[in-house]
Length: 318
Image 1 (tube, rainbow, N blue to C red):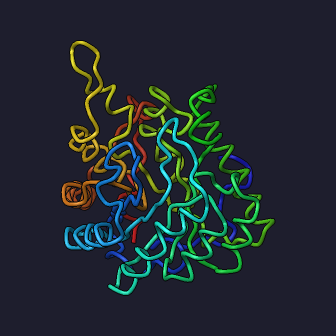
Image 2: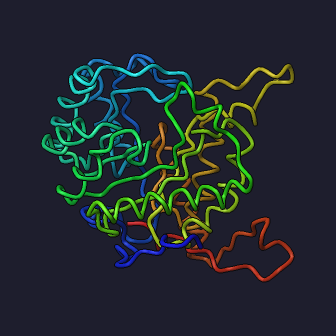
């Protein structure tokens, strides 16, 4: 375990502060994606108008989403940044409407100003793919608000991240770099019970680097913080499902593989999974919960041929 990663005052098995009322305490939560963008890799433009985004969010709630993650800036590989005023214009009305409808809303942003305005509009969680590295004011906003905060493993913005896909042991490196973020958050006044960790699948991890993180997700779960996994429709699944000629499977053809990952990481103790297809994921999480309830165990590359550690199941979920 990296030094400093174990929580000083853990949020407990029901997850981070402010979100412990969600779920039943036995399963991973399902976070549905609401992209208010014209250029997201999977569904850019489909929900760009506020009314369409709100309708989509309501539909995801009907399908069983526990949290809605609203984002106004694409983080797909190579994406250009948008002006802060445009990001605010995209997300704030959608967050206000969905929060009024009773949704638990997350804002997907790397900007402290956007986070602050989103929280004012009713968001209850900040999902920061940069882990606070993109905006030095982010930790102060989160500390003052006292809300849940997802800190993701990150090595640079979308236009440069693929060049940073260089690791020794990717799992050890990610855990160590997340531990450094935890220490920085503590120094800024963010409480451990606010923190959720995300290994950052696809971010500075273009292909094979993602699989060890998934296979050994229990190591990150074992470090004591709730863990969010966002594998939905990402490039490494496109490579896995590629056609015989090498053409990547298109994003919409990656949902079944996403469901499989969601079931596996839920059974291994993930607190939540972030997905585009909510209905299928809810079913996958139910499978994981039933598996764990019946005493199911997962054998990883580190436990194969040896005594297996008990699966954490839904104990890290809400």
